[in-house]
Structure formats: structure tokens, C-alpha cells
Length: 224
Ligand SMILES: *[C@@H]1O[C@H](CO)[C@@H](O)[C@H](O)[C@H]1NC(C)=O
Ligand SMILES: *[C@@H]1O[C@H](CO)[C@@H](O)[C@H](O)[C@H]1NC(C)=O
Ligand SMILES: *[C@@H]1O[C@H](CO)[C@@H](O)[C@H](O)[C@H]1NC(C)=O
Ligand SMILES: *[C@@H]1O[C@H](CO)[C@@H](O)[C@H](O)[C@H]1NC(C)=O
Image (cartoon, rainbow, N blue to C red; front, side):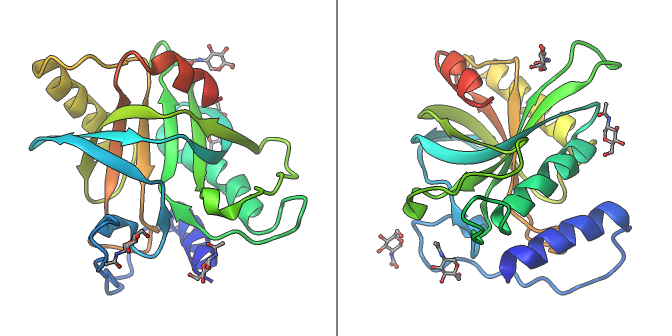
């Protein structure tokens, strides 16, 4: 099962150095209305309303997510801590005891702490396709269902791995570009969006999302 491979690989990544040179199985989507980087995963749908060399402006409609809140100093441990119960949830830790397909992206909301010695708040989320109808209720009380309202995000993309070096650097690069272009954005939080299992070594796609201002309050409160 695809999501089992995905999760197994996440745990391998977190416990072992990347030494295997597995061939990439990158297959570009033939359906041009689905972004190539979604591959076989069902992706949260969006509309690109503007695009330049550095970032896209995307409109996401309201969507359901399943989430876990984590506090930590840095991104990587927070992601692994949040990913585990979400993976359990899609693997049957829900009141119906059903398996749910892995989706994309894995979203991490990051509200940075006040200083380098403070923890930050991370919300790790899996997208729940509306086609699933009645979404199973989680059995782990740290896992909760939430609905994000429609919102507009500035989105930049990068390859390789999202980690404690690339994530802050990419987020800073995007805010610099937004400021230079006179965009009005919410500087108090940002998201990472990951689309690939860790065993995939090439053709990787990651994103930084920053909320366009004016929509911040609703999204911040709905995101837990
Ligand atoms: C692409 O996917 C969309 C949405 O799933 C669907 O409506 C459309 O017919 C597909 N197009 C092709 C060429 O398969
Ligand atoms: C951060 O994550 C690590 C690894 O999971 C964990 O050992 C540590 O307790 C966490 N720190 C906090 C402040 O929760
Ligand atoms: C789950 O994935 C399988 C295999 O890709 C697919 O056939 C099935 O329709 C998916 N189920 C849902 C509810 O999307
Ligand atoms: C993190 O979450 C806690 C508990 O909800 C809250 O008191 C704190 O202000 C949050 N910190 C940040 C930086 O958002």
C-alpha cells in the first residue's frame, strides 16, 4: 500500500542517513489539470491567480484537514512527532477502523516562538478529500479534524529536502521577495507543504506558503 511505504520511509529517514541510491520513480502527471508534483496522491485543489519567476499566488477553497499540534524548537523533530499519529489515523486509528489513502500535501503550519530559545508551535496536517464524505473520527485525542476556510497564499517552491536549514532560508527568501514586490502578507506564521516520500531522491517538490493579509485571522483560528 502506498501510504505504508510512505510512512515506513519517513521513519527510515528519521533514523538513518540517506545512503541508498534508489532510482527515482518520478512519473509526470498526464492530466494537465493536476500538478505534476501530486503524482499518485490526491492533492488539495487550488487555482493559480498570479505567477512570477519567484512565487505563485494561489486561491485555495475551503477544505478539510486532520491535524496534530506540536511544540518544539525546530522543524524536523516537530514534523516527525506530528506525522506519526496522523499516519496512525489514516491506518485505522479512527472510530470506523478504516484505512484512508495518503494525500498531499503534508502541511506544517509554523508559528515561530519569540526567540531562539523558545519553542515554536507547529500544526502538522494531512488533507482530507471531500470525496471521502463522512470523515472518520480520530481515536487519538491529539488528532483533530479541522476545516480551513478559503484563503489566498503566496507560494514558493524548492527541490531537495525540507529541513531545519532549507525551511528557514526558503521562508526568509519568500518574505524578502514579497516585501520587495510590495505584497501585503501575514508575517506571523507560514506553512511548509511537502509532496514526496523521503525515499524519493530526485524530482522532489516542497513549498512555502505565506498568507495574503486580510485573511489571516480566520485561517489562524481555524488552523488550531
Ligand atoms: C483531469 O482531471 C480532472 C479532474 O479530476 C478531470 O475533470 C479531467 O477530465 C481530467 N482530464 C483529462 C485529460 O484526463
Ligand atoms: C522535540 O523533539 C524531540 C525529538 O522528538 C524530543 O525529544 C523533544 O522532547 C522535543 N522538544 C520539546 C520541547 O518538546
Ligand atoms: C484510494 O486509492 C486507490 C488506489 O489508488 C483508489 O483506487 C481508490 O479509489 C482510493 N480511494 C479513495 C476513497 O479515494
Ligand atoms: C503556542 O501555543 C500556545 C498554546 O496554545 C500559546 O499559548 C502560545 O502563545 C503559542 N505561541 C506561538 C508563538 O504561537
